[in-house]
Image (cartoon, rainbow, N blue to C red; front, side):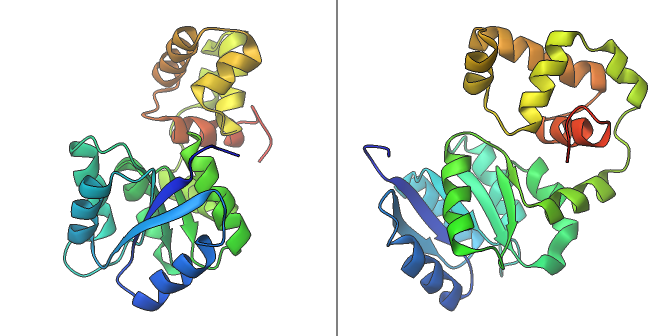
Length: 215
C-alpha cells in the first residue's frame, strides 16, 4: 500500500451521489476524499486549489459540464487523473470525454469495490474502460485504420501494443520488456504514427479489434 493515500475530488451535481461516494471511499485506507464540487466550474476551481490525484467527474452537470471541465483542466495542465463516472444512457459522450483527457470512463452502476480499484488503476497511470464502454467506443469510432497496417509494425512494436492494450503504463512496459522508458515512448509514437491513431486508447481498441490481443 502507498505511504500516502490517493487524494480524490468528487464532482457531481447530485448531492446524494457525492455523499454515497464519500461514504464508501472514506472506508478505503488508501483513498482520501479531499473535496467536492457541484458543477464543472466549481470542479475546476477546486482541482486547481486542492491538486487532487484523481477526480471522479460526472458528464452532465448544469453550467460547465464534464467535457468542458476536462478540456479546461487539460489546458491548465492540471496533473489530476480524471475518471468519468456517469449514467449508462450517455454512451455518446465516451469519445468526447476521452479526447478531452479522461483517464477512464465508468458507469454509475459499477460495483463499489470495482470503483475503488478503478481509482487505484488510473492513479497508477492506466487508461480504464468498462467492457460496455469499450464496445460503445468501438461502435462510435468505426474503423480507425486498416488491418493491413498491422504488417507495418515490428515484432517489438506489436509487443508494446499488446501491453498498451493490457492497460500498462510506459514504466511497466519498460520493465516487462527490459527497455528504457525513452525507448518505450519511441515505440508508442511509432505505433500511433503507423496505425494513424491519435492516442493510446485508440491503440488499445485497435489491438483488440484486429486480434493483437483478446477482448
